[in-house]
Image (cartoon, rainbow, N blue to C red; front, side):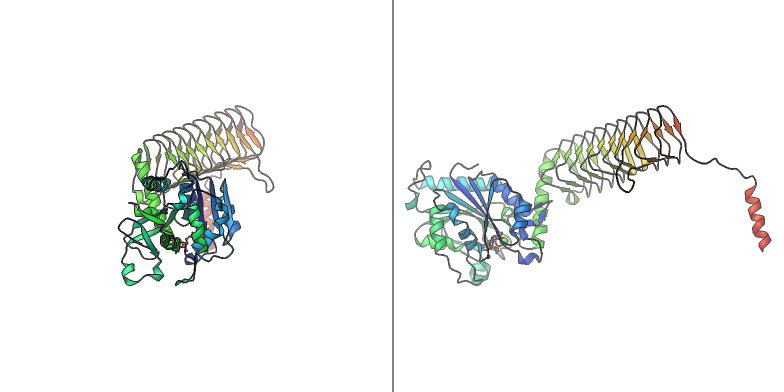
Length: 482
Ligand code: UD1
Ligand code: CA
């Protein structure tokens, strides 16, 4: 939250040529969300009174994918540069007596906290100059134009270089393609994140020109324009340079994803999660973990997933939009999606659970078992090679190996109900719709098409024949042929 009048402008109109992609650059995913989402998340921290997103290339796709509540979109028809992008939005801050936060949409690693600190720095500068923060009128004649966030990069290649005086005032920003050999040596770079006093910004935008190596209207030229009028932009160097990294190609995308992944792992590790081989583990933004969760290699936790205390997730599991209870064991190579697993259940290895299934307390779902849109009652076991779809299964039921709910007749899906303590023999085919009563039993290998009453046995298979000495007879038959 920032306590001075603020409008945010997020630049997201560019094509992202270096991505070599049909998809607009800012929609490329980092840990399951478009990179622009992260930039917006940081901006929202400040609660600006308006958030404008400049869109252009494939704008409908961007607007739809971002689905930003309370954002306004500005259309930049032709992408003539970052300066032109802000110029396009200028009517939205025409009468505004406050500050404009400008941020590149391809800077997903910036933290809200850092933006907030930059706002505080700006306030301190203004105070130092003797202005009264509660009264924004009268700033017009002050000498502070704004703040640009910078960082020192190990490899500054590709970024605008910061040329500044000894008072941290920026003299100019030089784009890579316009640098002299000396300027190339500067490792303090422009983050693409700025706060400008709106009336000054508006005036300077009118004066931008495109006489540079790329024939673009560079936003960065604003600083030099304002400086000539003795309105100064201050550089605020932020200590963690990873926050300002721009994402211009897929290599940088992968790099940014790794950095974010490491941040999340660090956070959870310090909050009581054990990770084995953490580099291989993937945890997305909306995941929530309780204490004493233990996670092995190659696990992916995606979407809105919550894992409660004491649960262990073995190698190669994927859990998406699911809620996992306390002390659950999810054994290797299992896939759980849009479902809930309650306390003390055991899942896997090699299990698949999906479409709003609920697996109750102490259930065992074993190897090669698929559960779809089903509720499985407490302490029920389905340990091997089974498909349970559209089923409602009671408590203490035993599902034999190879059991299948035949839920689909080629046109519609039908329900299977299995009541408490039923015993389903191995390889039973349950042709739905069907109900198996309490404590009912089905014989192995049966195809059950009719409801089974409580406590009854249903068996459907032909009688077994015994032919004595058949092996000998068969041998003789072949001997004769020779
Ligand atoms: C920009 C800065 C550079 C800085 C770097 C930080 C300029 C001239 N250069 O360079 O100093 O170090 O960011 O990452 O600003 N965009 C539009 N409309 C346009 C052009 C761009 O909306 O006409 C958007 C892009 O979608 C992107 C952002 O602005 O999100 C930055 O544009 P990009 O071309 O990536 O600028 P850089 O070359 O990275
Ligand atoms: Ca960029």
